[in-house]
Image (cartoon, rainbow, N blue to C red; front, side, top):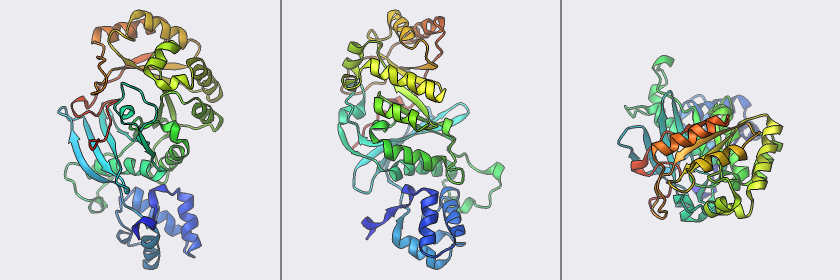
Length: 364
């Protein structure tokens, strides 16, 4: 029965080797299978001619290679962004986004169906929480985007491109952000396992510094990342410089207050000697004033930090407005005066609700 099959994308390479060896086959075959899937884009075990037929049969009866089904696909009018509504095996749906920037392509993947953090300005938070994603469901989103990129404009199956010379091959996925639906540190085990699989140099081979995990401030998760020396980049959604203001925007701040969050961030930065990215949704008239900018600079003093300023993206259930360019520039200038580097994030996919804080399944 399909429901009893284990998800291939939930396996690490070592686990696949162990499984193949337990069936009395050479571990060499496991390496070939891994390559067929992550480099050749194999959609079924029958598409692996160098793997013995008996092993392919065992794989077919034990593992599923199915990716989530694309229910809907929309692309932005500027051509830089595509959003995919994906159907999971149990009928739940998630959104995954492909974004293009100068010199890079980024996949924005989800870690949960919905979100339990309840941020009022976030469409996913407005959905509520349904369930965690498995590590395989997280990996499968990246695989889906990678295969979409590699098919290119002609849409031909990857198997038909096997003989293409390297300089003619289509682009590959090289950057990934865990900023889609859900709070990644609320689903710690599955998310970290997924990043380990995605970083496998014989598999997806995403560089650790090209994977960014964004958290609303789950303090135990930040401390655990530091203790485990997790190599992926950390981004913290801050949005306010005082406890009262932050709690009004981010309900989870009542559980993990601003002081505790900053203490965890200092611990992380000291232990790993790594910069932290702080995200700040610029809301007109609320947190985009010069006083707020100076407060941020004081708050982050002594941290190796960079602030990513993100003009608020609209959602149906929140009436705040994004800051204009002048306010964003003024905010950034004040941070620079205090020696705090910052960027104003390029907005992508607003016309298809694919921007930060806008993801929510269309079936909702």
